[in-house]
Length: 330
Picture (cartoon, rainbow, N blue to C red):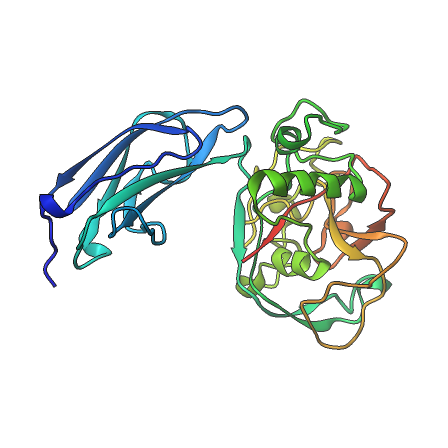
């Protein structure tokens, strides 16, 4: 089909979102559309996720965000003037008809943007027959797709939502948050989800271990991303007796940082013995006295940093070596 670029059938109609975008202009250059705009920083929103949409009925209905776009579009776009988006029309559409309208939309990101890593579902052997008594028996678990935090939640990310920093090791924006209880985290999740419109939560224990083992990209390492712990984890031998900024060492095979070491990470499950039966998307016990936390920390030895290692904490207790990371559904 012939691509139509007729002036009479193109009405460019730009809608701004929450007063973040203004001074929008466009121009046609060959088979591309170039959009320029200004992005204004809002309080507490240092970056934005910017999308470009188009309509063929003058803006009455809109499709999904355009994909074949480059420039100041996508995640983590910083505020500024004369931002530019280029749409390569022919790679996405063979023709455009009707009264064409365009919409530029910006959704504010949190300061200290929470970056998520996609984890493709699959089947793995959870636990270990060579570790502690609570790691046995190794058993088959199948999980659906999910997203997990690229890093542990940082002091800045918590402060942006809660307005305080309870950490013992304060004044380090990019260090993992600690000194919060499982119960405290529920309040954070409620406020975060209200602010973002998303459904962040704590990982199940199975999701945590699957991600730590790098899911279907696993190379079978003892620790998350390596058999050499110092390459991937801050632990008792190299931490200097404190937390360290996240994402400073090597990630695991999925690109996730610090799942061994830095701080232990609370999960959603109640702590209890494993079942030897194969399971699908397990959520653990329905009740209990303590919540599971996984992964070693800056204070721990190598044994505690193994991907199969488990421990527990009273849901109301806080510790300066325990924090958390987020999960969201696909």
